[in-house]
Length: 351
Ligand code: SF4
Image (cartoon, rainbow, N blue to C red; front, side, top):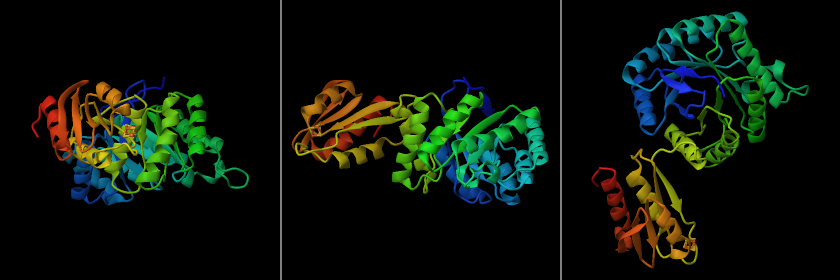
């Protein structure tokens, strides 16, 4: 079991539910744009939001952001330890430090003291792209052992300074390297582990790489919080994170979909219906299973076990709720509206 740290009231580690994080990609000093994005992230299920702090105006903006949003904020700090101190003074809930580019022990200890006074945790975030040269292999290669040593170097500095509110992350774009490094890390101590595959790509390949890397580790019981890193709208990171957690049965938020892959038997537009149903139910947070199946072969069993289902025929579908047929023959063009209305009625909303 890892130790527990608290970031703005959100518990990370200690067997608490795996926390979903993301990061804004607006200029942090543009408070209006950043508030809008943080709110979208929170609405989509993000529980801790990181913001880049590349300069003093960004650090100062945290003060105003904290007045506008309720989700805990993490300041992402590189190069300049004074930005960490400024972010702490502005009321940030957590820091991320990169041991690859703030290397002066005195400066790190100064951050630890200021964070300790405020009860703010620090994530030691090692990234293969910025690991200190001291921790590279003899030919300049990045190794799992080197990534772990880079993290432990800073963790030990913090702990020698009496600071224990530490979270550790080791990320690489290489999935096997990320997995191996996190396995090694987990054996070294009881710090909560933040998972991620960094620089994973755009939505499609990034989500797959992240699901493989993060999924392997979570399935082994490693990981207390995670961020899926995607180039694009960070809301998609949050959606991917929840899919990973739901796929492993760790946490669920909103509808999960059981969708047949379609084949020569399919008699309705399964992909189109699924997209439309997903859009109609996107705002729900209640865990539900919705099956959309193209024919009775596997459809009957899936429909009977789902909370709600469409079982396709030729140009029509049968609607199920909790294993029972509720409308036997709905024309295809009415299927989306009828299913969405049925679900919303159950959860107390009206279509
Ligand atoms: S459920 Fe029916 S339509 Fe869908 S893939 Fe299976 S056999 Fe094909």
